[in-house]
Structures are given as C-alpha cells and as structure tokens.
Length: 163
Image (cartoon, rainbow, N blue to C red; front, side, top):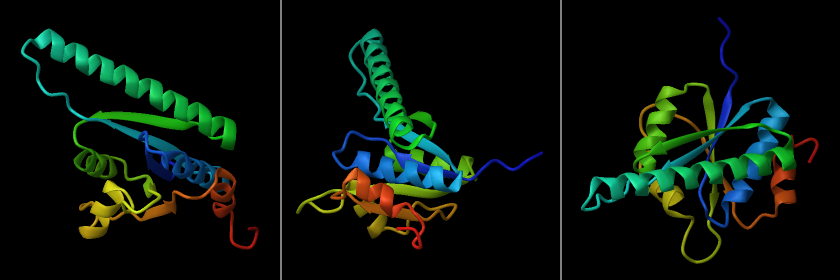
C-alpha cells in the first residue's frame, strides 16, 4: 500500500485575505506535488422553534459552503493548475480543524493569511499565537501576509534560488 501524498491545508473563509492564502497554498502545492485541501467549516445554526426551519437553515448553509468551495477550487485551478479537495465540516472552527489534522496525517502544512490593518492578524491566527497551537499532532502553520498581491504570493511559493 502506498503512502498518500503530502497535503497542504488552507481554511476556506470569506475574508478579504483568504485569496492570498489560497494562491500561496496552490502555488506551493503545484511546485511540490502536494495535494491541496480546502477546509470550510459551517458554524452550527441556532435551533429554531420548529425542526423543519432548523433543517432548512442547515441545508442552506451547506449549499452556500459547497458553492463557495467550488468557486475557490475553480479559482485555484485557473490560477495555479491545482485541483483542490474541498472538505466541509459543521461545528466550531478550531475543534474541527484539530479533528481533521488528527484524521489526515498526510497534512504537513496549514496555510493561513493574516488580516490587514489595525485589528490584528485575524481571529484564528491570533488564537493560535496565544495558545499552544492546535494540540494533538504538530503541524507547521504558515501565515501569509494578507497585504500581498496574488503575484507576490505566487512568487513567495517558489524556491529561494528561483525567486
């Protein structure tokens, strides 16, 4: 049985900085031959008074998440020539991220983008900086400056002797 190829994980969200993280991760996956995984975590919906309303809200959130990850996968294919593997989870981001890293030992790198501006690096980046990481299996986290252009992000994914 062959070992699965190494994978690069990027957390798919709707932040302004996410496309930079996706571009960097896609270019790095292309250069290294790694798989590219897009994780989209759907926040749990608050229970509505009727179960049918709650179920409809979940279905709509699932449809929106699928549409979003398909759009991101198409973008990274067009820009980097890499096929992204979308993974959808429902729950809170950090625990779901931790579970995925435990389940898929082929993930060797987590790529995030920092927010631009005075608000700080973003909630997940800040939380990882304040804690002992994600716990469990140690995986390097690479934080791409959100202020980069896509061309700069692609260039940064090249070996140092070629940049």
